[in-house]
Structure formats: structure tokens, C-alpha cells
Image (cartoon, rainbow, N blue to C red; front, side, top):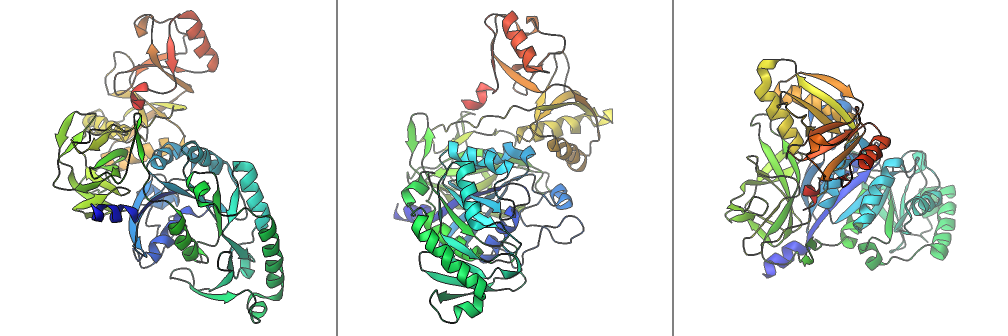
Length: 531
């Protein structure tokens, strides 16, 4: 038991969130660099560059230089076992980000020092606040000209509605960015640039060191002393209890591209962030230190390995210890099974493992039995974690295969991609799977869907845009759904679970249907996802 407790205590599982292009993926790579997981970091620069971010494994991500799917990476650093969940920044993939945040114990919010709080940052922060996830802020890109750090901190507090506590403070920005001042040790950490591809060398100096003004430059030195005086007088004190409850965000400054400030941030973050947190099962909280194993499915990804055409289910281990020889209960399926080919991941790289502990993310081979939100656990424990709700899609398209001879590949492709949660698939009454309606949260997901159908399943599609923008599941109906009184531009369809729902072109049509069908109850979510 002592071994389980010590192993779980050293786990740290966190998600990195940001607006697109704030430097999130670059920061992830630098963490891996310091953990010895990679030898050289490749800047994310799109298709002309030969190197791509380690966490961007899907071909379309390498071509566009953006992350469109969550990546999972594990590495060791200073005795801690770290699980990083790198999320897509683009708002069109917010559903994948939301599911990933369900698996995290804390979040690192990356903010561009020249742009401040951006739209997607606000949305992601709201999800963290809703779950009371501790949020650590890393203000990035100090190697470029940046806004005043006091203005940035004020904006975070005003826009996100959460007090902050500056753990360190930047010395200059752009070409004059020299390092950071650590408020706890009262030391200046100044950096020697090394091109950003290797660990940067840092030197500590006391604030009263007579040579410091010469090292930092007279203007930087004077500004720093003034800033520190102001911070000490007006800044919030660090309260770790408030941080762990998601009521205070520690703020760090640095540059992921040049490595300035990354290692000091990583070290402080690991000291401050909590080990695995309890998870709710009904009215009960499941303690991560419970010896019995439990986990839930938060992500499914097909074709991570083109050679094997496999499907991997990602599990967040919530309690106890997993052993590859153990039998587990698939709660939703109601049967015992042995998890096949358990592995830990570094983007698309994998390593077969014998054991894992609460806090870890493991991938298992999935023959098609798991769904997002499913619970697996020791038969002794028999818990059922809260489900993960599905976002309501806002964009719809009717699709079919160009080549009617590829029906089998078409059905397999749309079904597998839908099971991942990347798109939602709907069928019209009396039609099979030869032609379906695809719904997505963001239009860029259509591009990824079409790309994957062609590259992974060999299917080119004929696509027709549809004018629907609202979706409602039928929770309760006074008659058979096909007998409902609905407007001519409202469509009755069913999802993959054969649950009936309605597609509407406007809010007015929703009200019209409710007024003319007494007893009709509609929902934005499929209640089955919340069981």
C-alpha cells in the first residue's frame, strides 16, 4: 500500500490551454525537453519546415501548423511523474478540449504577452472555473515586445474574474528581455540565450548585487526595483489552498521559444500543483489512494498508427493501481474483460506498460466496445463516474461516398470518427448508412473529417451544406416522433444510438414545435450521455 501511495503522490496530470498561436504547443515541447523526453525541440512553422511539434501527430496538423486533436505525453522530472494533456487551441475543436479538461487535475493557461486575454482563453477558463480546476497562468512570448506586465495581470483579473498572484516578474521584453525576478527567493534569474533548441543556462543573483545594474542594463534595473516595490505593496499573497480550490491563479512570465523562464516555471508549478484529485461517482467521492483500480474513458482515437489501423481508447486512472494482468469491469457494458495492450504515449509514440497509477493516462486497444464517458474498474469497487456531456453541433452537412463500391469503408469511417466524438452522425427516417447528416461544433472540423475519410479510409465524399443551426433531442413526446407537428424546414433524424431528435433552422421553429405539441420535452444534450 505504501508503494501505491508514494507513486500516486508523485503524479501530476495537467492540461495546457490557450487561444491559438499563444505558444502552447511550444511550451509543451520545452517541458519535454527539460524532462529528457526529447533531445531537440522543433518550432511549429507549418508545412515548409521539416520539423513539427512532437505533440502534433496527425498529418493535417503538420501541414497547417496547428493542433486539432488532444495529445497525451508522459515524462519524469525531479522525481515527479508528469502527464501532460496538450489541447487544441482553435475554438472549432473546443469539444475535444472540454473532454480533455475532464481528465486533468489542473490547467496551465498560456497567454500571449502582446495580446493578453483572447476569446478562446475566456471560454476555456470558464470550463476550468465550472469544475474548480486550479489554473496556473504562463504569460508567454516575452522575447517579443510585450504589454506592460501590470496591465496584463489586471486584464486577467478583470476578464476572468479571478485574483492572481505573481510568482515571478519579467525584466524587460523583446530584445531587452533579460530574465525574471523570483519573488520568493528575492533573486534575479537572468538567462544566457542558446538558440532555444537546448536547455538555456540561467544564473541567479541577489537583487542588491552591485553588478546587477550592468548585467540587466540601467533602465531594466531601475524599472525592476520600482515594479517590485509596487508588487510587494499591492499584490495578492500566495494562498495555496485558494489555488487548489480554483480561486487564485499564480502567474509566471517567460518565453517558451527561447526557454527563458520555462524551467523556473516548471519547478514552481510542480511544487504548487496538487496530486491526483478525488472523482465523483453518484453521491460518493472516490479517493485516488483507494487501492482498487478505477478509470474513465475521455478520448477515443482511430488510426493513430497507420500500419495497424487500430483504435486506441484513452483512460484517466482515477484510483489505485492498474496491472495489465488484472480483470476489470466495463460498467456500461456490464462485463468483465482484460484491457488489451495497455500503453503510455508520447503523441503517436507508444510504450507497452505493466502498471499505472491514479493520475496516469493510459491507452488501451479498443475493439469497438468503449464510448466516451465509460467507466472501467476493479469488480470489487463497481463505481460509475459521471458521464461527459456532448456539445450540441451548430453546423450540418449531408455526406455520401463518391464511389458506391466503397460503402463498407464509408460506414466504417464515419462510425469510428463519430465514436471518437470528433463529429456527430445522424440518419434520416427510412435511410440506411449510405447517406448521413454530419454535425460539428466548428466548421474546421468538416475539413478534418473530409481529410481523415480520404487519407485513413480511402473515401472521397460528396458533401452538401444544410441550413440547420439548432439541435434538440426528444426527451418526451406526446406521440410517435414521426407524427409530431413540425415546420417544413425542421427535420426529424436519429443519432447513432437510434435516439430521435430534431434539427431546426432557427429558435423560432423550436418554439413553434413546442407550442403545437403539448407534452413535447426537448433537450440540448442527449441525456444518455449524462448517465
